[in-house]
Length: 278
Image (cartoon, rainbow, N blue to C red):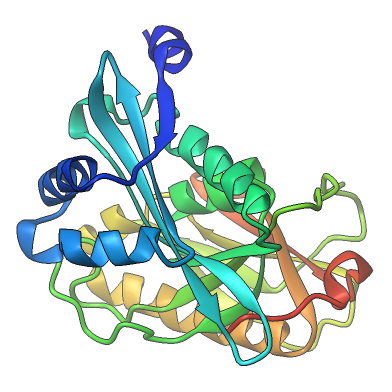
């Protein structure tokens, strides 16, 4: 079924009020009516350097991707604001298809880089953003949205990675070898693993940071453990990113069941001269 949906999927750029109203209805279904973008705002975005992509299956809108232009005082870039998939069509790879269409459209419009944020402890997002799409991270933003009451964010600070996805450059595959050093030591506990020790003194060119594979389950089972993961990983990522490391990939942690590892590189010249949008 996944193959049939993907091969039948049609992606197009949306402009009309009718199409943008359909996006608003789908957005309300995915999140809530209060969180959906008003059509008058969507119209303004698509007429002023942004775009909204729609994914159609059998003439039905089942996914969308919303982007608008950003400016940091020096350079214009594309901000990937939101992506939503109809609940009946999740886990079919439609999000990745929309993201790749976004990159193609951005390149055609003259953008060099696309940025967005995500929670580094949400490894499903990390797998898509870094491992599949090939984006990188150079910035960690603590509690960017403040306290939020929704199911995913309630009770914990909204820390985020700022993703950079370069439109006209490809990222080389990471090679794991003997030179990979871990910035955290783990200890097994009742609900998985906890960070026993962090190391902020590493001077190697390749390091790793382990994170849970099912963070929401930890939150439900042991909020104090989840809060500890947030604090410890905030300390590690903030330190190394501020000292020139780059997060380049997310892979399964072969030593600790249920864990993933972020891979970080020091002084990656491929990205060293790029503008950091923060």
